[in-house]
Length: 150
Length: 143
Image (tube, rainbow over all chains, first blue to last red; front, top):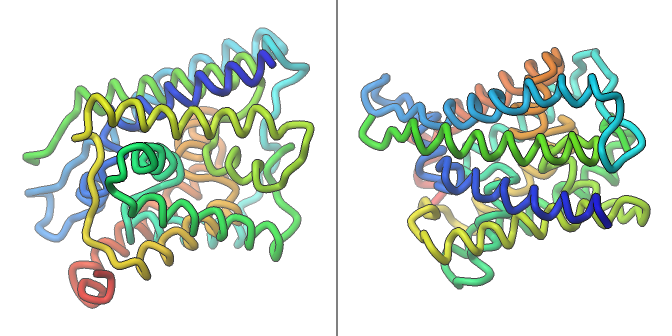
C-alpha cells in the first residue's frame, strides 16, 4: 500500500516533469533530433531534461544505497548485467526508430494519452500507446528471457 | 534555436529526477517507464499494484497538466500507419533493449552503466537518422 502510494505520486510528478520539460511535444522532440539545417534551428532543450534528471538522481542513488535498503522495501533492485549484446543494441536501435518516427518515447506517450483520454484532443498518442503495449507484449512473448530484474 | 527552453526543460528534468528518486529511495525500484509498463503486461500479481499505480499517475498527471496548460501537448502530422509502426518499434525495442529514455537515460547513466550508455547512444543515433530520413524519402510515406 505504501509502495503503491509512492508509485502513484511519482507517476504524477514524472508526468509533470515531462510536460514542463517539453517531452510531450513531439514537434520539440523531433526538433532535438533535427539537423537538417545544421545547428541553425536545432533545439537542444531535451538535453537539459536529461541533465536535470541526472542532477537529482545521481546523488540520490548514492545516498539511498549508502542507507542500505529502501524505506518501504526489503532491498534495492538494480540490473546486474554488464555485457553489451546484440539484443540490447538491436532493441535500442528499434526504439530510436520509433521515437524518431512519431516523437513519443514511453513516458510522454502515456502522459499524452492521459490528456487525450480526458480532453478528446490528440488521439495520436492513444493510437501509439495501444500499439506500443502490443509491441511490448509481442516482444515478451517471442523473445525471452529478459534481463530486467523482477 | 527559437524554441529553446533551457529553464523549463531543466526544471522538468529535475522533477523527473525527483520522481525517479522517490521510486528508488522508497521502493527500491528503477523508475524506467518501459520497464514498469512492460511489467504490468506480465500480470504478476505480487508487483502489479505499484506498477499500475505508477502508470495511472503518468496518465492522470498528463491529464491534469493538460487541463491547466494545453500548450504542453501537440501533434506532428502522422498517418495511423506511422503511429502504429512507431508504437510497435517503441514497444518491441524497449523490451528487447531493456529500457527507454528514463530507465537507460536517467537511471542507467546515473549509475554509470556501460549497457545503458551503449543503449542511449544507439537510440539517439537511430532517432536522429529516422528524423533525417523523414525530411527525405520518408516524408510522404509517414503522413
